[in-house]
Structure formats: C-alpha cells, structure tokens
Amino acid sequence: MSHRPGPDELLFLPLGGAGEIGMNLNLYGHAGKWLMIDLGIAFGDDDTPGIDVVMPDPAFIAERSADLAGLVLTHAHEDHIGAVPYLWPQLRCPIYATPFAASLVRRKLVEAGLKEAAPITEIPLSGRFSVGPFEIELITLTHSIPEPNAVVVRTKLGTVLHTGDWKLDPDPLVGPVADEAALRRIGAEGVLAMVCDSTNALVEGQSGSEAEVRATLDRLIGERRQRVAVACFASNVARLGTIAEVAARHDRQVGLVGRSLWRIDAAARETGYLADLPPFVSEHDIAFLPRDKVVMVCTGSQGEPRSALARIARNEHPQATLESGDSVIFSSRVIPGNERAIFKLQDELVRLGLEVLTDREHPVHVSGHPARAELAQMYHWVRPRIAVPVHGEPRHLVAHAKLAEECQVPATIVPQNGSLIRLAPGPAGRVDEVASGRLGLDGNALVPIGGEIMQQRRRILHGGSVVVTLVAGRDGRLLAAPQLAAPGLLGSGDAALVAELAAEVRDAVDALSAAQRHDDAALKEAARLAVRRGFRARRDKKPVTEVQLVRL
Image 1 (cartoon, rainbow, N blue to C red):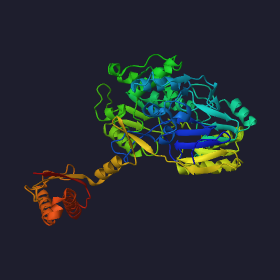
Image 2 (image 1 turned 90 degrees about the vertical axis):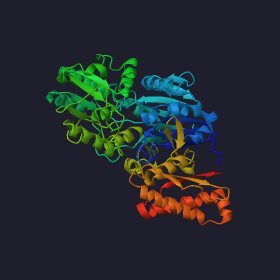
Image 3 (image 1 turned 60 degrees about the horizontal axis):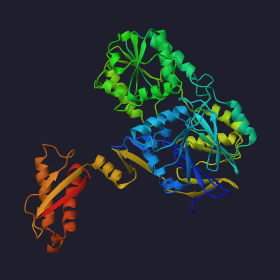
Image 4 (image 1 turned 45 degrees about the vertical axis):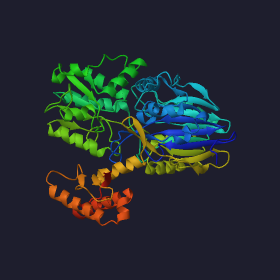
C-alpha cells in the first residue's frame, strides 16, 4: 500500500516507544497528512558499544516529509524531545510545544546550530490550534516535569486522546493538578481511541504524591550532620523545589552539580517556575561552604559514567567532593536496564565511607507514571471505544490491555513499533507493518543500530580483532614473516603464540595453488581463516580478522 492516509481514514503508527520505554515517536495519519507526537531518545547500553544516545529511525516519515504537517511535543523529558536536534533536519516540519518544553528545545537547537531553521510555535497550557487536517487541544496533566500535556487529536472520523506521560498527583507542588473537568468533557463528547502510557501497568494502587517525598527528604536531611548529596532526574523541577525548601528549613544552601541541572534551572526560571527560590550555588562555590551547610544536587541517578556523581565517586570532579561520613540520597527510581551501572556507583560511594540512601529503604521517590488505579480512573473519565497501550515493554502493554478490557473498553490493540493501525473507519486493527528501527549517535554521526558498523563492533567487543599484514611478491610468495596486531587479545607475554600463528598463516599461503596466490581475495581469505582457526584452537575466540596485503 502507498501509506498515504486517505480522506476517510484515520491511522496510528508508532515508530518508537511501543514495546519499549523511551524513544517515543508516534504518527497519526488522516486526509493525506501525518501528525507526529513526540520525538525522543533512549540511552545506550552494553548492546550498543560506543553509543551513548539511541533514537527511532524516522526513515518512513522522512521519505514522506512533504506530508508531515507538524510535530507536537507532549512534555520536555528526553525520551519525548531528545531526538529533535538530531532528526529534525530530515523532517523540517513546524514544532509545537508549551513554554517549558519550548525553552528546552530551543536550547538544544542552538547547540545543534538549528535555532533559526527549526520553527517552534509556543502553545499556552490548555491551548487549541490546528495542524494540517488535525484539530488539536492540550489537556494539562501531572507528571515529574512541568507542563505535561495530553493531546486531543480531533478529525472528522473521531477524536483520539494521546495521553503522553502522566499520573494523578493531588499535590504536585509544581504546576496545577490534572484537568479532570477537561478529561470528563472529552469523554462526554465521545473518544474513539485513547493511546496511553503503560509504564506502571503492573503496579497496583496509586503512584504517590510529590508531597510525600518532601516529608521524607525533610526528615533525612534534617538528621544528617555532614554534607548531603541528592541524585535525582535533572528534569524533575518539583524535586529541585522540594530539596531547596527542605534545605532552607535546615539552614543549608543548595548547589547544582551537572550541566543538565543548570539547563533545567534556567528553563524553569525563564518560564516562571522556581521563581520564589534564591539562586542555586555554583559548583565552584560549594567548596567554600561548611559541610553541614550545603546540599548538593547531582546528576547521575542512573549511574551514568560521565555524570557528576560518578566523577565525584572516582575523585575526578574538578570542584565537588564527598568525604567519609557524608550522605548520598538517590531520589529516583532504577530504570530497567540501568541496574548494573547504578549498583556499581552505589558500591563505589560506600567504599569511600559514604552513607547511601535509596528508595528501597525510604520513600524518597514517587513515579511520574500512572499505576493501575489511576489508569482505571482515566478510563472511567474518558470512556474510549479503543484502547491502544504504548510507552511500555511488551509485558506492560499486555497488562494494560487486560486492564482496559476490565474497564469495559470494547476494543484493545497492542501495537509494536512499525504497526500501522487503522482506527477508523470500520473495526480497528493492524493493516500493515512498516519498516522501523533504531539509530545510534556515534560521535556526531547517526548509524543504524542493526547495521553493519554496529554488528562488527559487537563482534569485536566479544571476540576481539586481529589485523594481519602480508608482504608478497608478484608470484604470491611471502617476502617476510606475517605481522599480527591484536590489541586486547595478545599481550607482551604472547610472543610465542604470535610466532605460531604467523607460521600457520605462512603455511596456509604456501599451500595455495599458483593461481590462488595470484588472486588477492583468495590469498587474504586463506590467511584470515588460518588466524581464526589458530585463535579458536588456543583461546576459544573468533576474532574479527582483517588482512592487509602489500604486493611488491
């Protein structure tokens, strides 16, 4: 099929964020146009060596960029806006965001040299606007960042509520509570489909309130007598406000350690948040404060090796330090996949004589995503005819779908990235699968995560690599002993093994026929196989082997 939505057709297509947490990229198709909601990233792991940032491959919509009416950003978390500076040049569409998200995206675009090129239209909270054939309304929700918005997408075929990330927090501390009246109103008007956050679909009850965290941090910080560091998500402006108010009650000043924290602080103050708080202390000035008069807020809650807290743990930070007897509070949850890095960092801190406090022992964090009772409440208000769970791993999506069925939603569809779903007309369901994938930021280049470069890099990571240099005459006879270089596989004590492998390479070349020795490809392949056989027999390794041939 052409994948150009018809005038009497409403399509939904996730290219990121369906079957995973992070990298959100959602498309709605109608009347020949596409609407994109969110364009986010995830972070690299052990399966993506050398890659720090991963994002959806936008090839499907980039090929149809002329039909892309615009990009609407639900909120300012990296998994919803982080890919904009990397992928917008392929899309070149208008961007729509509320003030806080717009402020952060502008900063990213400035760093990418795209400030003048990428147009951002700032939309007020609860604003209404048009994007191509789509009529858009924003509904204010609560989350762990200012200005989270559900997006109401109205078409002549029906209304879709795209929730973005949300929770129901009766006391969010920053920003208003969720707009229940607006949710009830669109539910009464009639909602065709709700595309909804599934992160905590396996968690019973409520997600909890930011006010509960404030009480716990107040107690913990009040009990400490030396320097306190708090690791939290930089984007959690409410948590920054909580820490500042708690610190003030205990006669402590607050310093920010980490670039992303300062970036968030600037965007928050620019858009009217944290306005009542005094300026935070700089990293440089923290060192001049008595140890019992400061709270440091640090990046690194997920164990990121280049974060401020990780550098402090390694005694590599140029300004901030922690000493034996100080305390570190991890005011964050463990994102699945980050366990190893986080526990490693916590162990490093404990070895320095620091007290480490986490949400396993104290309620120092609440999730920004809805637990099952909140999901049920949302379904009670909105009453969609179709439930489409997104923003979750497969187990989250399936659990969410079952909950929707229990809430009497007539139809549920569990998508995966690349699932082209027709929401209307007729019964909703998949109509096709389109190509989807991931791109990794490799230095300043984007490379396919499933492509040749990354496949080769994974093989090198696990099996190592060997470079063999051969010098041969015109007749194909070797004029010198083969030279082997294998960093990470062969050390200074392996001279005997190198000599044995070189001899086996020579034997393999000598065994070739005259015609084969004149064939560069055949000669190089014989040497390559000899090296791999030698490593397999002696080290049980299958290194990536490259043969360089010089003919004289």
